[in-house]
Length: 263
Length: 110
Image 1 (tube, chains in turn purple, yellow):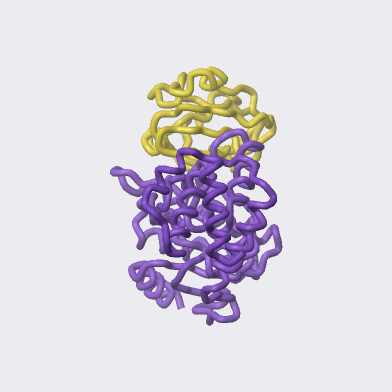
Image 2 (image 1 turned 90 degrees about the vertical axis):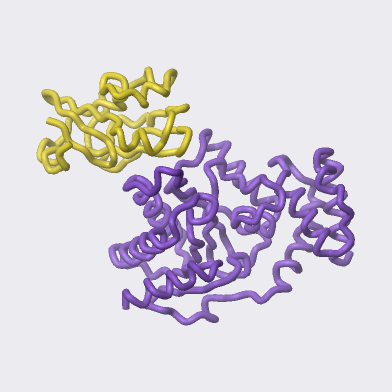
């Protein structure tokens, strides 16, 4: 099968399994990019239920190629801005590091809104449907929603990284940032770093946790991120290499400024 | 004497230390809809003591002190919104004994 045939198979499977998916398929998808978006939307709304081995095989073949047809970045490609600290702008799903950090929500099942442009959506889409199943197992065992400020580890499946660490940041409403929310954001970084060290990882890439859908102000979030990581590495004599992965120009300039000041 | 730590109040009466919600924590998390206590009787400072699901946040609360849990607000398990009450008699979480008084005294005054 070529990529086009694989997508046709995957879309066919997902539509047969979920009749509600036809709402997404009303616009005819002809190009491979359109088909990918349809496949993505169908995966996003897919319930965490078992999937056939054949589906997984075709999906993995498709995603392996789809993910690796882009430029993949490794730790060795980057220059540290401070010892053990790296700053990189780009798509976190192109990083071949030990773990990438996903900004999850308290259900921890990945974004369920079709084609929504958030990091949780794109990480789950490009990892494959196994990621939601793995998260579902963790949540079933836990028996309650995931608290803010903690960290959960899964395989990264078809992503170039080895693992995904899922953490739920604090949600900022109209009342704004409070000391509790700041503490919860710091806890996201601490819990994730501790888990990475526990698993003896060498490199980890943080997204800007809580600054997307959760509205945490970018500047304050970056200050907390950098401070918490620096404190953690020093206090624990950790050898972890930490990449601050930014996606927007705004976050890039904030981190550039803050990291230079710290030198 | 009343102290605060980990966004919770701690009130000492004789040798029992009652841990309860602070107004800041209540405001931050919203209406509590689910409460699950951790079933560990001997807790260290910063150990989890309960999980809360509220309208704005899902939160794990951590013990402000090392001690022995002698009582939990079991009523809050069936009536979670009690934790939004302004009254300590309703919004308390756990009662601790065997607490090091010096550790308590070092906490910030409420």
